[in-house]
Length: 317
Length: 169
Image 1 (cartoon, each protein chain N blue to C red):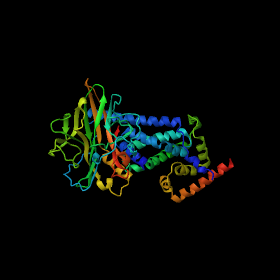
Image 2 (cartoon, rainbow over the protein chains, first blue to last red):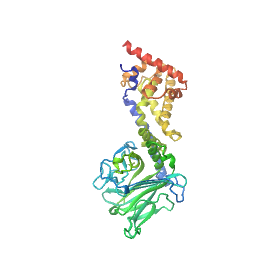
Image 3 (cartoon, rainbow over the protein chains, first blue to last red):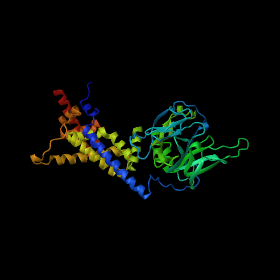
Image 4 (cartoon, rainbow over the protein chains, first blue to last red):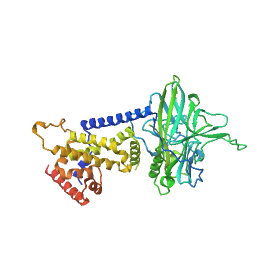
């Protein structure tokens, strides 16, 4: 059978120069308009995106709980088996980041490009799945009001020259740091006093007595020194009580893609800002968001999991 | 489905006035935007104006879009209106001394333009929306404010016109 004549309308088109120029001109107007708005906000001291306020909830009974953590045991650095992840489109312009001065890495031991220490460099347009290696992972819990609360565990690592401190702040969520009672990596902080429904991930206890040797604190922002950013007795978790209903996000009737979509919606207001302070007093910053992705069982080594399932991914903005 | 997830995420970011998310969103639709514009206006210069106007209008109004999955449909509707505005303005009679030749010659996508020329104004847009961009009959009927049966009839006749044109070549 010959080619349908209508198929001529389906062929790819070349965008003419005049169209591209007018399109770029429109984009430039939009960028300039946005820059002016942000400059005005800076002057008023309202700079930066503001997350939604979360209601303070009581301790939940955890009617439904999803725990995905390395306690199931797993494989080494095989192919992460990411079927597809929700990637931020490749952005050529950066709103407020000086990327060539420092790099942010996240612990993602199963990712194919993970370094020997299990860290992956965050780059614009690249979604990095959280690691399920060892004692990190995530917990999702259904709160009393039927919404999803989350706790995502990872390690961040900042690398660069002449950096003295790194301050992490978060909108739309809370940092949970679990660390030894008698030592801390936190040099200064802004505490969070509300309730988080998921409990926590991490901690060390005395194997003989069972005494818990770790302490858990919640922060809106915390600072660490460059030379002491993390250690293997400290867990830095990202927690929150979302406004999204458990059944809507993770109901049994939801497809995998719908769950990923639900996770995206759940995390859309969460923005982590990493501000570095250099030895000369100057500063620079980067932003990280968290979205949804899909991971295959091969990528996790979790034998109980027979199907691909949703996970969280980190994205540099 | 995962491309839809990506679009959904970009729309949400654009609704929070993230210009980079918005520009990326528009870039994903650029081919279809050009196809629609050229099907109505039949020249690249007017198509460029219509697309530019549409981008700015969408940026201004994107926070009013209630359902992110309908972004493309919503944007296409705005584009069609912008194209029809330009076409109406062009059709006004103007004195010879005010007439300006198009700045550029249309040297791109000649084959598609010839096919569209063959179809004529009545069938071009409907055929392009259906075959070029994958919209359903009901969606096209919605865009153009006409009964679905009319859209179906014009598709049938449009196909026939194209077949006749290619047979006569």
